[in-house]
Length: 184
Ligand code: FNR
Image (cartoon, rainbow, N blue to C red):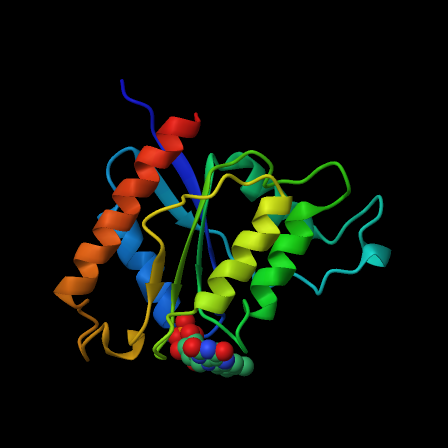
């Protein structure tokens, strides 16, 4: 039987109608059979504070860390806020990285896809994410670099994804599947 890898998806936007959440759901649908993807929610994580992260951390911290640790790989799908990643995404990275010495992300292959209605496709957020994940020992998919600009037009009123973007997503998720298998 061939191996199936569990991939935890972190979505950087908390809003219900998020384009990035829709893209994450599209990636789930397009993934090859070797990947089992699931969104791990980050919206309930309290802002990271070492004072509350002692012997009894907040249950949301513990649940999040366990879900990340249980995953074989990590997929970050994010918009850009003020040329960086949105605060909930950075917060989730901070929570998962602690307590010191127990980094939940360590060694798991990762990939990032950024999308924005603007022209730059979240380039700034994308690279700030890569910067944080380098220090957390997450080997990131180098290519295809996927910055999706003009994302306000990706889905029609019925929620159907533009076919050209679907091709881009398919290439991305297939490359990620190969990357995960290579790191295993
Ligand atoms: C934005 N937006 C934005 N877009 C961008 O391309 N570069 C940026 O720096 C910013 N900055 C920014 C800051 C804040 C506080 C907000 C709320 C928004 C616009 C952003 O890309 C747009 O709202 C997306 O639709 C957000 O992604 P979701 O929620 O649709 O996934």
